[in-house]
View 1 (cartoon, rainbow, N blue to C red):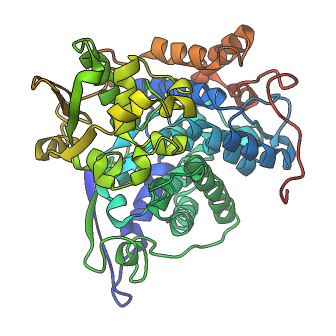
View 2 (spheres, rainbow, N blue to C red):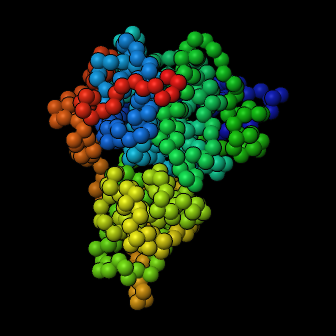
View 3 (cartoon, rainbow, N blue to C red):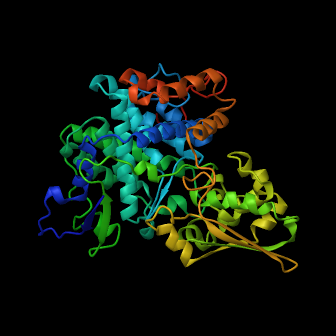
Length: 506
């Protein structure tokens, strides 16, 4: 890896195109580096993972509404929409919109945390949609699809390592959208200049505020990455027609660094692979065993372990979670969001309240993507009482480990101190979730398949599950006509609302 130094350039200064970050990302996307076998296997895992969480959310409101919008845009030879018949196609940007919303809704797919946050699996829906729509016409293969996904993961994870967005209250889709554009460019084997122009547009249009993840969190949290994917597809399409974009998009005097991030004196370092180096960043990311914000994964597992030593939960006087800056200020009491303590809060808000999550995990000894969030579950008096005894604080050591570059020391956990009314205490800590690659039970292919089968039970037939798993595990050997089969179908007549409606404009 090499470090690319990033700063603001005044208009009278010369910054060659070849020295701009967007160009460096485009070069990464346009190269044909060897595909690492382990990274390729992880691409298969993440396609399975995305399908699992998408199908589990298939009839939830945001997902059904996004699908309804896609239904208004049918296209012969288009892309597939989760749940619907593989013989029916839709415009790629609308399929990406519907599928991206489905993947994100339950907050249960992969994550990468460093200087900023990310869910790099959000790149798969738009890249796959473009592959399904353009694959036959452009002679694409499973290797092209793999390369596109690996490129998107690499770009987003490298940006997340080098540039913090949340410090300036910018949402993390500002790193996602250019990654998606780069991945689509790699998939389609586009030249460096075309990808460069697409990345610049993607950056320009994708900066939004973090209010989408603050206070009473709305359903937009699920739509946000799908919106980025739709914008990325449109950016690539426009660049392929020869159009240009604002430049230099990161370094310009009136652009991203100067006015969205650290100001005119900004200085960042973004790690990038050396030319010809295989793209392996996907291996730095990790999936979720539990349907909750990633920084709660280890704490859910820790709650399960600690409850085994507690005879009477009602005897608890207080719980203090010593954790990182990110966890304390984003999902802890440091956020100062009263909604995080409100039994009537939305599912999205409860998902971002470690106080609620730890209370329920401690009481139940299990975590379920539906049952753990129902209004009835959140309103239980004993849960509310326990929930309101929990607080968080920043511990400098956990913050240091959160940002540590050494993967063996990097941690997303906490130390929990439970004090009882009789004066006794129980203290335990966990650095990484059990499912993490360095955790007690690291996720492998069998775990991804089990997660898929559990989340799709009663929604997808056994035959359809087998068909999909066989197809996706043959990814390296696939040709373009096979890409439609990377969608999972359900019985639309009985299980899935699939009629175009007249509630909106489309």
